[in-house]
Length: 145
Image (cartoon, rainbow, N blue to C red; front, side):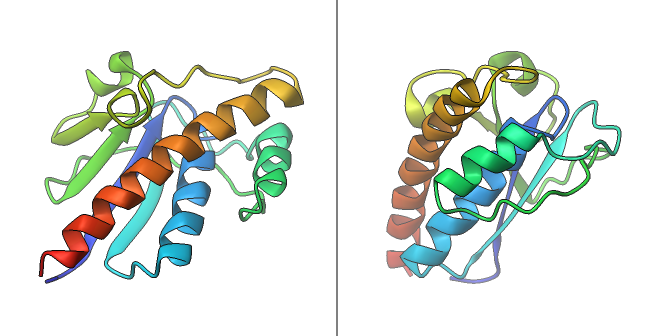
């Protein structure tokens, strides 16, 4: 495979959904031995806020990197990046190559912002299902060298 595939998960604030998707996807590709993917996440309205404590707790429960970080705003679109939007509404605001999580797990990813831990954990599990499906697609791509 020539070069790296760049994936960027996108949500509203980059403190919950896209942050969890980035960490869960990194875990999945590492476990699968995939080394041709560069993974990031951004928020359309991110302000530098720290990751949600419940998002970090849910990541820890799923054995993914749960270290807090500041949210990062999506400032410009890169035509070489595949963006993965949490919802159709977010997809409509992203320019370039973009798919929805719905394409990977059958439904949009609801925003858990401000909800209890159980809601975050359910959200993280849904995101992880989408990441598993995306990892399987990447394995097929990697095998077609």
